[in-house]
Every structure is written in C-alpha cells, then in structure tokens.
Length: 119
Image (cartoon, helix red, strand yellow):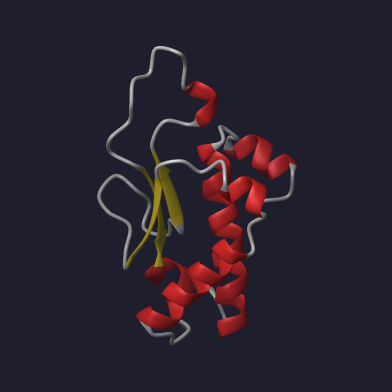
C-alpha cells in the first residue's frame, strides 16, 4: 500500500536530503536544478525514482561553452510513495535517490554506485 504524504511533505523530504549532502559536494553542483514530479515521463520506467539529465562533470571538456540550460535532477513522488511502507521509508529512499542522482552528475554510473552500496 502506498504511503500517504502530501506534495509539500515530499518536497520537504527532498530539501532535507539536500541539506544532508556535504557542503563540499553541493558547492561543486554548478547550474543544477532539483525538481519534484508526480510520475516519470515517457522514456523512463514507471518505477523510476529519480533521473539526472545533463552532461556529467566527467564528460565536460575544455571545448564546452557556457551552459545556459541547467542540468536537472528530478525526484518522482508517485513511484517513491508506492514502493515505501512508511513515511520514514520515504525519507530514507529520497535521501538515497538524491545522492544517487548527484553521483550521476559527477559521472558515477550505476555499476559503480552498486559497488559502493548505493543501488
């Protein structure tokens, strides 16, 4: 059964997760926006909890000009609430998802995240 949590409460859990990210990592997030959406959009699996869209830091070279459109990290409320059993589970899963997507921004792929225990 899906956890009942208002959008405002869910957004607060995303904000809390960001507050838990070490400042030295947040300082390296340049031109990145964090969003909350209800459901994954076309092209993503229905149970996707979050997605990073942009050019990972490891793929940016000297020839990349100024980036006007920010990278996006989107956390999906619906799938997260459906997979969790309690509000505390939601808070924990949101924290994991936020870290997971930030890692993608820094060029860490899913295989490496799994090795590190962040799958």
